[in-house]
Image 1 (tube, rainbow, N blue to C red):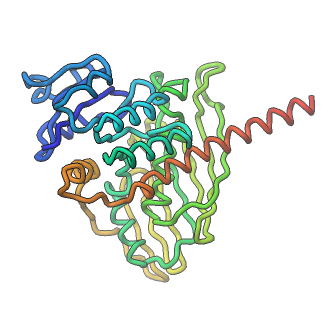
Image 2 (image 1 turned 135 degrees about the horizontal axis):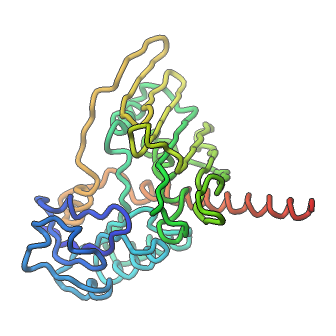
Image 3 (image 1 turned 90 degrees about the vertical axis):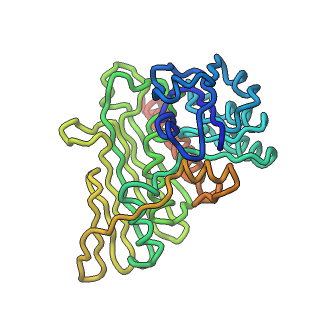
Length: 331
């Protein structure tokens, strides 16, 4: 049994998944309101309630920490602290806000011998596992182009400060970048990006509302990602997302956030893909930490989309700086 501590609730903390997990239990919490915990965890008399991450890391009962740090800009250093303290780490995305921080996490994991993983199971749920399986089986031939969209609605609680949650590209578009590398199974080679605050209801607000990214793939193919906080509630889905993978023999797609798939090979419409299931990503992490399982992705494969959204964010900031300089020169 893996003894897990929960730190923070800024993101998708895993308390509900652990309420009756056969291989893990919550033994400690910090920076998470008790009312957010399921009854089975909250009412456990052995549950330790700490005030800080440091207190959690000194708790000898804790084997692993699930990080949803109160500010995402602190999460990389939180992960390094936990790894150096001898704890496995499962972290909300993005796990870091710079490549240097990402490299620090990887180095700390390697040095400690403990397992670090991001909450990166995008390709292993919904329609995406079936699409991944079709691509890996070669059913659409060589991937030439990937078109993906990730759209969420705006609401007043969205942080205007990207240091709180990572911002549009790093915490929203990361799913669409995982579509490219983990579903279309094609590594990225380069990226260009732009983003805008246009449409932000707050005057001079820092929240980026839309972004576009273009990628060159390692096999010579291309990919595009659009991400935004413009999904109108009338769509009926919280996360409106579309993925279309086009290859030399056909294409496979999932449309409009509904999970409806379609496979077309040559002149034949094969219809929807059969549902595919596998062990959920968290359970794979837990079993790997216990020495009784294996992750479906290597750490390098898992964190590659994170690295590319960090590079996309840097590219967008560089593009914005060039535009500002050009405007200033023109004036």
